[in-house]
Amino acid sequence: MTRPELRIRFDASIAADLPFGLSFLLNPFWCITMEKIVADFLRHAGLPVSKSYVSKLIRSHPDYPSILSIADAFEQLGISYQVSRTENSEINRLESPFLIHLNRNKGEVAEIRHKKDLTEAIRADWSGIVVQVASKTQVPDLENSSEFKKERRRLTGSIVILVAVTCVLLTSAWPGFALHGVVLAGLSVIGLALGILLTFKDFGAGSALLSALCGRGKVTDCNDVLKSKGASIKGIKLSGVTVVFFAWSLANVGLFFSDHFAYGIAMLWVSALLSLPMVLYSVHYQAFKIKSWCRICMMVNLILLCQAVILSFSVDLSVILTSSFFLDALKSFFVLAIASGSFYLIQSLISEISVLRQNVVEDLRIINSVDAFRSLLFKQKRIRAESFNYELTVGSPHASMTIMVACNLYCNPCKEKHMKLMNMLQGNEENVRVVFRFALSGNDEGREISSNQYLIQFWLLNIHGRDDESVRTRDLLHDWFSAMNLVRFQRSHPLPIGTDFSQAKLIESKHIEWFDQVYIEFTPTFFLNWYQIPTVYTLDHLKILLPALISEDMIQTELSESFVKS
Image (cartoon, rainbow, N blue to C red; front, side, top):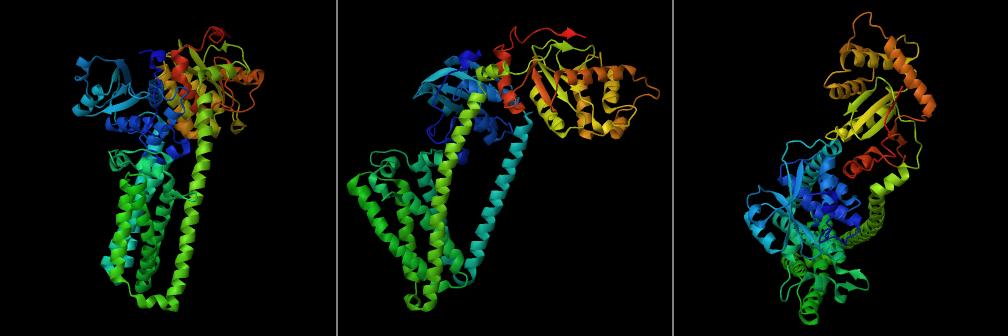
């Protein structure tokens, strides 16, 4: 399918109306977003992708949400893929998993992993479009690899923290009241998790878990309850109260139960009694006011009742009138204040972050637009389309796009950008070539043979003119930037004793003269077909733009001026 055909737009997700910041925070664990479905699909296909990075690539695409935004994300990741129209009779022959496009609602994307998924999808108005990928053990995109490792470390860290917190609670509870501590702490954890789910539901998030718990029925619908007037009291949402209450209960378990068992039981008993009116209000409101039930709300009510019953059989009322109890009650009150303030502070910060991230992603969609890039590029400095007789080049000499790099062999930013540039070029060598020009470095002061001259001479003798010149030039520059030291480079890339460097010196002099003529202010500086790439655009932006630039033949006659040999 062509790029125009891939611009089929559809509803991004159940959580499509969520602020970007919130969906970013919830994804990939809670929201059923289009980009989460795609990331899960890639994982199921055996590809080690970072879910957050895939989400960023797709959401920042100027044609988001569309099949094109998915296809270009695959291009940037270096994943082989195919988008095609398939007949119903042929789809059963496809190897799963794969993605399909559905016409229902505003358009959806769905992953097919099993035969039953396929039957349901065809029944749900399948458009005939299928997206397939080739399974690999590695994804060449370096940033994806970095983000994937970070996600693995975060997951490991989260598991360690969860296990550690559980152990702390259990060991704190064990000395005085093992069973009570475990049960009450467990109920508080479950209640806290349900409160968080209610808060997510308030924000409009969707997930398989939420769908299962809040599935619509004749008399059950969480949305009816949570969006009703009774779900908040004087502007305070009961979902937030639930989170604060159970966080406070859990904190009380940790604060009092190891050393002040009787006081802790009494404290929680008082709090459980105070929660009972809310349970009665919740049940009465759902049964008689809106006549619809929220399953999660009823689970919360059940947990509160269980806590009240357990505590009623455990409490020693005589401790309530002691001075120590009032001191502990004061401490608990401060914990409640901290829990309340923290929750509403975090809630407001999420709202602000949501707005900021939404602005960022909208800016990225503008920056990643080919029209915006072209408009800005043509306003930049244009240099003479001039080629030297000997050019260190990576990529096909017949490529329609030329990226000229003005760099310094001892420049750390040049090293960093070189790695990104080579990563971007991977898989695009037939369409893009990269030409390197080297500045004179202060590190070569006093040397008879400069680093530029040695590198160029080695290239002339061992690489230039070979069939694999492009690959060997890429490897040579990689070796240099890995060492960035002439002595070490000479040891790994020796030249014969008595080598004549006159040709290398001539080429270096042309490079230096070119730097002066073009007036390069800093290294690295990049030119795309003789136009200086705007400073607002990084190589990351150019990588995102590259598929569109190549396929839409953006480099037209005004850009594709032939080399002038010199």
